[in-house]
Amino acid sequence: MSTSQKNKPTAFTLALALITLALGPATNAVLAQGTSLEISEVKDQKTKLDAAKAGGEADEVKPSTKETDKTSDKSSDKSSDTPTAAEPEKDKEKTGTNSESGIAGEAKEKTGTNSEPGIAGEAKETASQKAEELAKLSGHISWCKSIAFSPDGSKAISGSDDDTVRYWDLTTGKEIKRLDGHEDNVNSVAFSPDATKVVSGSIDKTLKIWNLETGSCEKTLKGHANFITAVTWAPGGKQIASADYDGTIHIWDVESGKTVTVLTGRPTTIRCLAFTPDGAYLFSGASDRQITQWKLKDGSQVRQLSGHKGDITALDVKGDGKTLLSASRDLSLRLWDVASGAETKKLVGHGDWIVNAAFCDDGNIVSGSLDKTFRRWSTEGNELNCYTMNSFGMWSLAFTKDGKKALTGSNDYTLRYWKLSD
Image (cartoon, rainbow, N blue to C red; front, top):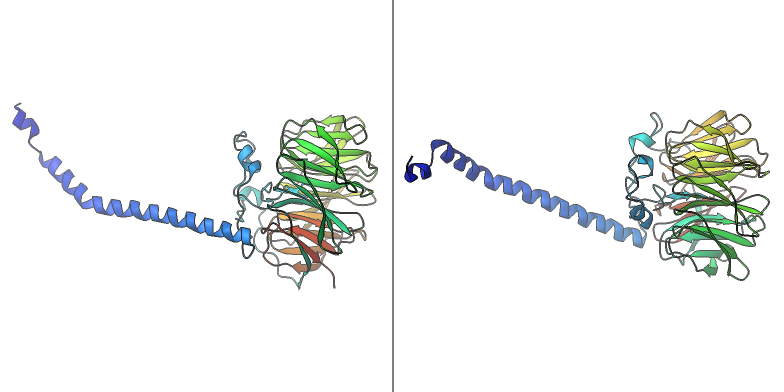
């Protein structure tokens, strides 16, 4: 075949060229449109993030976090730990604690695995009243991941992604002390039973015990191999429990600062902890939707409590030690018999993830959710009250022991102090 024959275009080649010319502009237009949409979406997301920093209608925006970034290389089998979007206690951790709620901490994207059929969706229509905002506490320069009231409800502490712990006077709404020392986000905080000390847990893998009178760090507890997700003080005040991202729990002696017991066997992120009133048992709630009861005398697992369809976000034990309360991202609260581990009641009404829940002194239950409501329940499972809040977001949440006041960590980095009674 001659060179001229080789170079001579065939009918097929000419047809292909004509088709390419015809489709080229359309194809380019489609590509240009796709690029424009992506740019528009990025701009829209940036606008929402800017709104989050300024407050306003920004509770739909959940910015990414250091915790999420630092754990992005975790194995894919921890599917419930992988955030679908950065959010206040939707993973809070920019997630929740709740640790003492979250949490913990941190777009409202409900995943199919976290929503239970017949429960997901908007909150039930019920008679409600507006929660009264008593004060706005300003000082933090990033999201507040954990909050706790003092036993008498007059003071509060908060831990933030600005790496600080802050001590507040709720009668004045003023900051009493700023506690500096952590090298990374503070995920969980808890008062000692006598309210003279505070323990904080951080992404820097340490716990710190603070003297509230002096504002000094008395001890730094080291032993965790991963970042701290939850801390709580034992009822007697002599021990502290802490949990980390890998599912390891340490029981610490407060006086010596040494680890007494290490509880292992639950290789999943633990989000919340609760002691029984006698200090004999510890409950842990995890991202694998399981609750574990631990016997502290020998460090053994007593049982697993199964039933929730989403991450466990909060745990509390009733004052008589007989009933455990759990809250979950499956939008439900559940009551369990401590002696047998049997589920005794399921409370449904919230329309979005539950951030925290607790028993009140009178035996009733209070809970708060990303559906922008606080609810009060009887132990029989009846909803007694529903209080609505403004759209400030809810990165963290705590209640007073009487259940009549609440504190929330908001999108604008402030804490909001709420009244939940007539």
